[in-house]
Length: 469
Ligand SMILES: Cc1cc2nc3c(=O)[nH]c(=O)nc-3n(C[C@H](O)[C@H](O)[C@H](O)COP(=O)(O)OP(=O)(O)OC[C@H]3O[C@@H](n4cnc5c(N)ncnc54)[C@H](O)[C@@H]3O)c2cc1C
Image 1 (tube, rainbow, N blue to C red):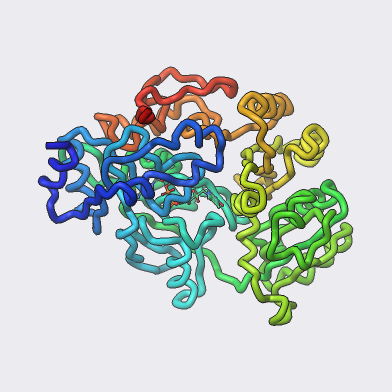
Image 2 (image 1 turned 45 degrees about the vertical axis):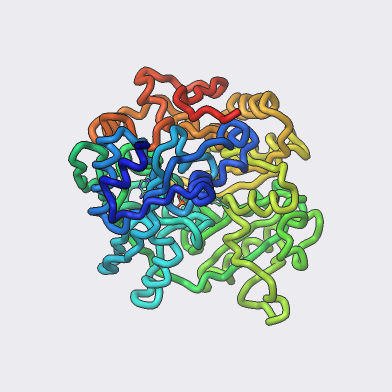
């Protein structure tokens, strides 16, 4: 009897799917955006998809998998774009999307199960309380809240509230451990850090408590500038004005907006460098004044549109964060991207230098965010990919220029986070997953507790499922 058949015998009332097509689909995320990950992970496939309906079924599934030594990779909406949700060692994909209840909305917080889609949460909090999520990834309609916390980092709203792991942005996480007798552990305060952005490798999230923010009918704007440095300067300046309530401000370098934002092309010209903005209605007038004074042209403003012009438009957040990459790939599927932290003491000079160093190869895309009281330029430049050697050369140039390359072409936590071993995250894995069965292969520290990050060296997971010849 196979291990999966044995599993089905142990948990007969919990849905297990072994149909090849379904399992293949749920074994993949957006890893293929990276040509490097595409080559490394294309063959990866689980043996089964297990779909618990509630926390108690999650616990019973984990207990059975523990007994049978079956690896378990949790999965939400499957929109992670560096293989976070891919079952590198096979085993079971734990599909969390049926745990999707919003348990309570009260006193400015929401308590929710992990499989709830982020937009579905806002569909409830907005009308009932006039509140919304502080931030969401640009995949808000498809991503789950558990997947965002375990696999994401920030997004639309981070310009005001900081990144997801900023203290106070997650109030409580309940995780289930992978042990003989799984436990529910409630994490609050600093303890949350160990499980947020840990790819589910040290606990399966079964409940999330998030703080909410006042909701607005955000006005969408595209503001164009003749030069990249003007666009950056304007974006950087207005982000500092805390009285202007912004939900989002991204800068995208020419020629990307005109070439790739197909639905918005009618508002743009080919040389436009563009700021993509979501602003509170009460911020629009003072914001427009400032942006125009810095040479900007308001190319598009959602509250000024005729019905004819509105036809065919998406929501503006679909031009920002990793949706910028998505729009570019729709036109040119060879395009990929980088994630680059820009030095806080000389952001505009550095961004300008990058643009001059890699003309036509890197196209600027910057998200302005706040963290710990400061404004940061977080860069997600589009990359016309040549080969792995060239990618490394570019990354090392950026590092030498004082940037931090958070590698989206690696499925390893530390390589993506540009970090050595995270001792707290590792300790939680030891405590919660002593056999190392949760999302194997993602945490280098589990294999090597002395690991030191080196941007030039990739440490592949030794247990990576072999490709079938
Ligand atoms: C077009 C596009 C735009 C994007 N924009 C953004 C963005 O703006 N900001 C951002 O941060 N990311 C962004 N991403 C990445 C991704 O969408 C987000 O990280 C997203 O929130 C992941 O949610 P998901 O439900 O799809 O998670 P999945 O991809 O299913 O999973 C992500 C990780 O979380 C783990 N996981 C899932 N559920 C659980 C659970 N219940 N318990 C424990 N672990 C769990 C998985 O094992 C995996 O490691 C983008 C990706 C794409 C393709």
